[in-house]
Length: 94
Image (tube, rainbow, N blue to C red; front, side, top):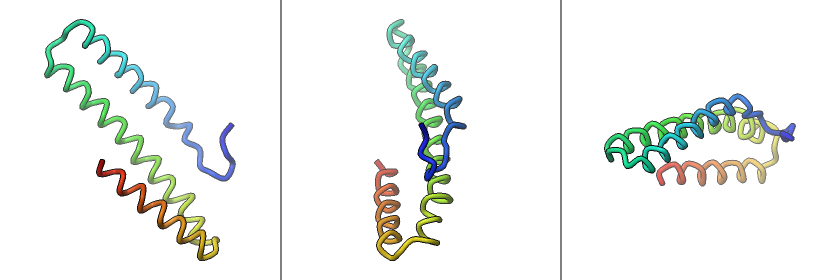
């Protein structure tokens, strides 16, 4: 059950299901011994799709959760949100 304090990401389910299908397709390609560049091309497509979802969820988090903490929270919760966002952005380079 979704947490009412956080934005819903239900809209991403269709995209996640598509990615799951892509992953299954890549698995089949590996099992069939397909040509490496074909597999790599499909993996790049999966990576791009995941990045798109990641970006959208981050945007939603910033515009909802973080914005709310900045507007209504006390100093400690604002600082906690800033630290959290900083950690998130540092992980995006990995």
